[in-house]
Image 1 (tube, one colour):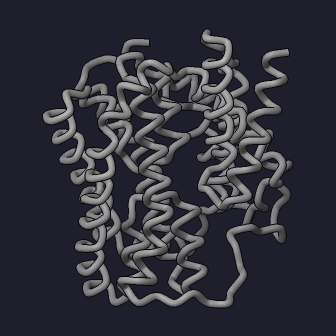
Image 2 (cartoon, rainbow, N blue to C red):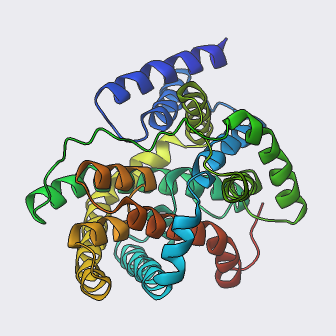
Length: 342
């Protein structure tokens, strides 16, 4: 009964957050619901990792379907800019993490995972692969990073970079291609293969690989139905929330001013480097900034749509960074911190 009530509470909270246009509302609803249940019953709760893994298949499909030949064309023509942009973002994150480690006496490993713009779901999923990482720090910092940037970036491009909101009501939703149910079952095969190969977060990366391959071979893939994405995000949020510790969260609250300062620094770096991108490749400063900004892939693209910017450029840069971080971070962490403790 507790788990049924947990799902109901998560759904209600997610719906409220969605109503107020809060980013990743269903994931946050799941996290908040799990925390509330832990506080009320003063005990930890458990949530099936297998259910979370199946939810990652849906998220992976939703990410991999974006890949098409226009993105490959941008990659081949702007490889230097794309790689450099990603490296600048990573270096800025490392600098912020080192400062917070020194002045806030926090674990560098955990702070870095909490600051890296590799996607909330993806970074929190990596926590399972190494028990040395503090899930409380990663979850709180990733939530604040995404929320702050998703809210501040549209404000910045309109009020400081001169963007204007267009009347284009287009979204990233697509229903004129290959049905999602034809491809989604094969994402499980990709996940099993990646598991066999010993890859990190195999259910996510295996699903992305299958969806991306299908998109290139078969053409544009349809968007997953809203109800399926909602369920997947709710279950991921509940799983993340179940792994948090209320007492630890209270300690982390003291470091929040430093977190916001670090996020502000990352945004300033993004604006500064956007000038270089804009000048070198000839697209607008706003497009360059949205391509560079350390926010959510979908959110930055939707901001680009609403302001009439080059969404293909934004999507390519954001998607490359997302995939690079998800593929490169696990082995890099092992190289620097040693073998993970599972």
